Image 1 (cartoon, helix red, strand yellow):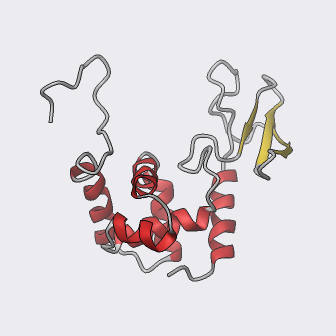
Image 2 (cartoon, helix red, strand yellow; image 1 turned 90 degrees about the horizontal axis):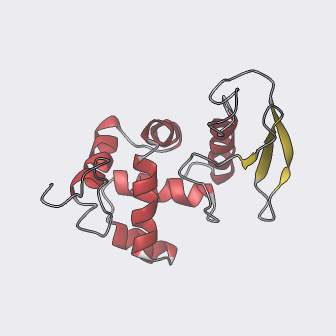
Length: 164
């Protein structure tokens, strides 16, 4: 399904490094791009790139604020699974093929929905996924996700009781 797993992993890395900003909301450079305050700062024990904000001194990983944050799974595996769901494969089949739990696939889908634009860019670039299939993926998240164990977020200040 993946044209080239290494290429997909490289493209995800490039996407993660594009317009890297400080995630610390208290930092004067929070959200600002191309200020020169972000530098590479070693790697985690798992081999993920770490960064340092020279303005506030906070460190963070390349995956912070992405669907890949705190996941140990290879990025290409996650993107492959999302592409398969977009093309109509049920999460149960993906879980069985990858020898993982269905709940894991469902969490990946939920995380991807929170970063739809970035995920779409990768899926459109590396897979034979159409816009219609992407719409179906996000519809799956919206309509069926809750039935499969993914709780739909409620509005802040609401209990969620009695809401669809």
